[in-house]
Length: 85
Image (cartoon, rainbow, N blue to C red):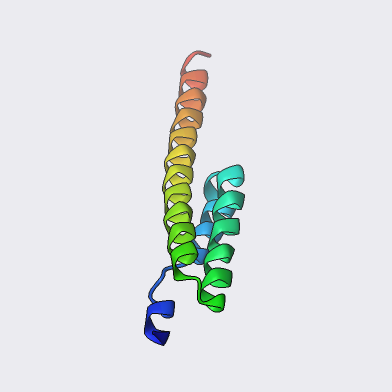
């Protein structure tokens, strides 16, 4: 059963990247759920660890998509602003 505890991904590195580079609020939430995965896996509660892992992954995906969309909007606004002068 020890190997099952280590197979639940935490997405900790992705959560930190999301926090710093993409979307701060969703990155914070994803980081919290990533830490919950480690905590739950450490106590042997694999159901709770698995649920927190799925939530962390979803929050990271949404955060990266929101960050990319926001970046595209900023680029478009800057380009349109320069051509309007």
